[in-house]
Image 1 (cartoon, rainbow, N blue to C red):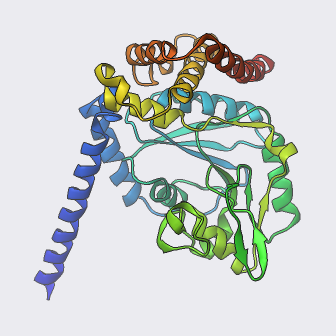
Image 2 (spheres, rainbow, N blue to C red; image 1 turned 90 degrees about the vertical axis):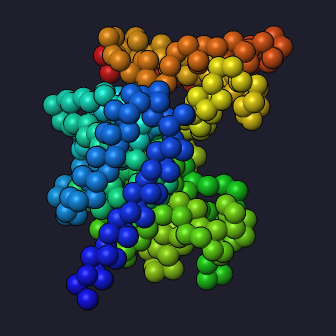
Amino acid sequence: MVLNKYVSALLKLLHRLRGDFWLIRHNWNFNHLHHGGLLAVLRCLVGTYRIEMSPPNQIAAIQPDWMTFSVVPGLTFLWAGLVARLGPEFVGRILIGDCSGGFNGTGKTSHQSWVVKHLLNYSHGQKSDLFFLKVCKSEYVVVCDDDVLWLDSTPIEWALQQMMSDPKVAVVSLLPRGRFQWAIDGKSYQPMGSYCLVVRRSIWQKENLPFLSIPGPSINPQSYKGEYDTADYANVELIKRGYRVVIAPDNIREHIIGLKGISSAIMDIHKHKAGILSEISIPAEKLFSTLTLVKGLQKLILKYFPGSRQVNEFGGDAIIDKAYLTYREKLDVQAIESIEQAQSEILLKLDEVFQKSL
């Protein structure tokens, strides 16, 4: 009986290591290779097991924890720099799950600190579940993609007001899904998504809810693959169990900027390398638009964080520059001017945020 127990445990460990090996191999060309190579892999591997072996955290703070995950350290550094400027009443700890192994931009101010934990690039839901249980400490947790940039504190202030005025509010969504609706008990509900949420951790843990995607049919076949995508199952279950999921109105959401697609574009460029950029499946206008924005974000880092390594941690300037020039040549002058104008407006807003905090 004892021998069978040890054999079972050994087989489980070997299965886990095999899965992690294939995950690392899959991530190597477009992720770890550009952020430290084998050392980056080692950081993520060791960091993952350290988090998993740590005990669950109890709720020990009211100031919100801010949680994000990184595969493009330069983008995450900029995100954290903007969050840090929102004020001590809205920002407790900034929690960064670095899945590249190359994030080095730790920072600290008089009122908050950045906590960087290296881990393997599991699915978004799996990483979120692990962090929520083992790393977060606050009653309120902002779960936010690092390409969602904050212009001011209006959204978090509004979200906390919703929660403090009604103990049944479990989640406030600041960037909901817009493609379909959940039909529950004869009513329609906009899906909260997983891009930018403020979560009441005590309810989430009490109800034992996952961020993890759930295979099998969801209650709406129009959802991603007809299944429950990241946080979708929790969204539906919260409503069914009598809790409220509040969707922020447009006048609140306009205080944040969603820059979807930056991380995936950077990884796609790395995956195809300089010599075969033409094989990238992203449309030329969309990719050029993303790269124009990336180059602008690099300039912001240089301007407001002089001497920082993070400006180079979008994964290699040479390949980004080559991709930028390659796709610029594919577009006509009118398309280029339109894209540059649109992205300059976003960069100007971000520049104004940093200027105000000087």
